[in-house]
Length: 634
Image (cartoon, rainbow, N blue to C red; front, side):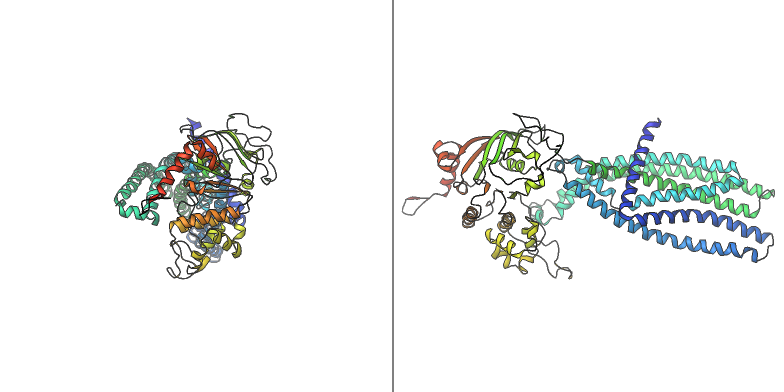
């Protein structure tokens, strides 16, 4: 029976120690100062009780006034400490909170940034743990407040329990023993509370999801048009009711436990007080002894209660901190393969990290080869890619086409190491990209994805996120914008490139609404995303995933003409459903059911009269119309 209880306690002690070290790294002087302050606060109560006894006994014994001056003076100083110390403590705890929370937040998101791909960010179990990790370090000083509160309580209790023991060991034993069930009960409640947080985590995330939808400008159009507000509010309220019910059950159990403990404590103290009065009546104790006893019993009871509360709060915080540590300990996922092992046909995805990796990713000289690449998002999903073999020569422009779900976007995400092949390998000039540092591999690439981000930044920042070295380089930003055909649009904005492309914030320190941003159309946003890619135009590989889906015909033609000129001699990968945009590619790969069904130039694929020819014919027919003279044009 002891092991299930002791195990979590020991685990909480370990996590608590690491949480203290986190606070120490962020605010060591404040932590030591806080500890000394708590010890002083704990000791002053005991000292005040004995000094009060000395004054009372001296006055009853008709001592000289001079004999009580020093005790009274010290009592005055202790009163000052009692009044000022909590104010200092509140300031110190707040400062520790600020510094430790800042350090913890940076460490937490640095750990998330280390994940190589997207797998963990698509894992609901990990997302629940990440949310709990964020909660656990919102106020790290709270753990110190609880833990050091225990130390303060121990100092105070040792003094008062010792004082009680000098007067009546039996009563002391009763008071102390009455508190033991409280510790055990509160620890068990804390364990249940921690488990409750784990259980309600998914419901809380869903509630936040609905709340964000209801306040999202992007979702507001459909919510208003389709009258989804009541439906979404109903679901949000349902999730809240579920979490509230779980909290209510635990709160009721905690209320019952604490009420029972309070009654037990009052019975014990009342019995001790009756004994004390009887002993004083028999002349066995002095009035000063009575004052010490009353103060000691009251302080012991309140001290034990505070210790129980502080201990369980620290225990709860330490258990929650386990989620933070779990995120920090998580190895970058998925792990790269050993550099000594070259992938054979259909190898399983390796799980051991490499012993070493190249210091840098060399410039692409030969090309990129996909060798028997298989991929699926999990064992429960169907295969997206089924043994893709493909070679992309350095300096060539290749196009990937196919129906929705054929695996085009997945393939380029594998190339960027946002996912890893389930089987097979992708080689960069013959080297498995899993042997290469992912940051340096990605630094060799520029990309615009079909689901590009529209950041709530300024126009300049929205472009510069593609290459942060261009953040303050107006020439580079303008050049990229001109290549994407969005320079004139940005220049016409109220503050030009410094205009916010959002209405969520205001620019500058002025009053709200004094300098709000603007909203761009979908096509304009797509050009901004293209400019973000073009700021990296000198990279070895440029990936353009449906770059013209939101553009008009003239802009699309201009885009591909510019791209052809700018990217001449560099490797480009183009994904598009508009086959007219890919006809000039050096090589076109047609994906079907996760494999390369056809490959070749535009002319060769038309001659094959296969999928490409059929799709091209369908699109071409859509552009043909009958001239008033009756002739077909297109």
